Length: 283
Image (tube, rainbow, N blue to C red; front, side):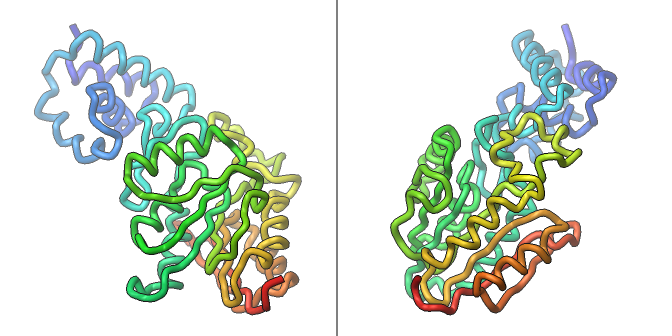
């Protein structure tokens, strides 16, 4: 029989860091993904407890997957985003904390919860992270979320249903299924260059949600060019992009006719998001 302490020591000896070893053991015991970090305090007091055979077997399987490079969120089946416990798996990208910058920005642009109801579009919604976070914070908003992948939309639908946050999910490439105009369009599109050497570290995540042409800007170019047709006058387009793509994205927005251009930095201080305002009449 194997104790909690022995199982953890074995995982660390195999090359897993302490945090992952702890969280995976708790997940193997059935702790929900959103509660894993808080539950770590259970481990020291139960170091000599014997693990049930099925729990230890499950733990070994989790450890093997993590050592093979699978993201922790996929292994445990969930990831917290903007305080919401999201279900995630290999059908969608793992939501990153840096993307919460887009949510913060949209909320700051439209801060009055008692004001007029807003319409917002989330392009490339994946797990639904951005759309659901905004709906949670602004229940009166009408939010549409688009993704080209039916598999990704199934994950978003499951999250929306479980969290009881009604958003409209539309399948299609970028604006193809959209027939409305919005106060705000947000997107965390693919923006990694196809030959980027760091892609190998992301091999378990869907490449279609990561790469966008030789310079990583193909999808952003399309979104910027098409967005005016779907924005109300005075509406905003908010984009996440690579840490070195800010000047290029800002230039695209300016060339298309957006003004009031602005930038936001991520948790590491990198230029991660750029926005512009569409002052023109509807196209």
